[in-house]
Image (tube, rainbow, N blue to C red; front, side):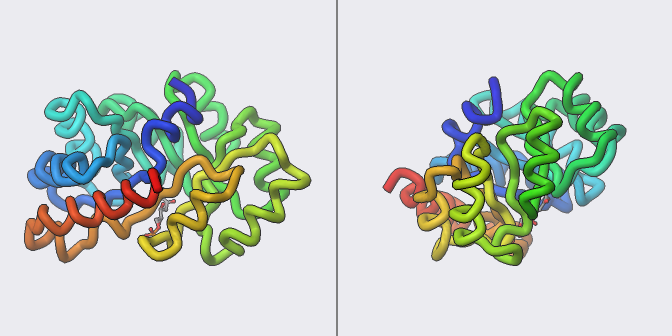
Length: 208
Ligand SMILES: O=C(O)C(=O)C[C@H](O)[C@H](O)COP(=O)(O)O
């Protein structure tokens, strides 16, 4: 599977911060019930690797990847835990080289034309625009389309139910990602119905 295929399967990608691996499977089921098929677990917490492993074991129908990767050891740990794709807020030479031997899609983060061109030189034509809203959002994506027509983006950072559709309508946007689908307080109170509702609302935007 390549990055484009991944994003066609999951045009909205929940970006998940999980503090307790014990909730991972219920959380994933709640997202899947709302129509999500691709999930990103950020490596920001100690529970992330175990959470990913549990999701892989219990939900074989879902594609689970690792986010917030900053180093080669993190990528290796994510792959060991079963990550089927990897996402980073940026791109370093170390990550580019690790990604080339990873055997799964890698989506580097970019925020400027030079970063996008550098990532393209490294072989990554599908990129994460991050932090999307802060660096120019839809207008930046529209401005990049002319000079960088080969690139496709997954904007994240500041995306929510109110602006996701406008992003998804851009021809160079393949998917959007964000944490709005999995609010901390909903995970804390195990309000899976709320998470399913948020996911269903997002899935409808993607298909609308
Ligand atoms: O963890 C990563 O891989 C990142 O680089 C950043 C996340 O995609 C964004 O932090 C999500 O942004 P929000 O939806 O605004 O919370």
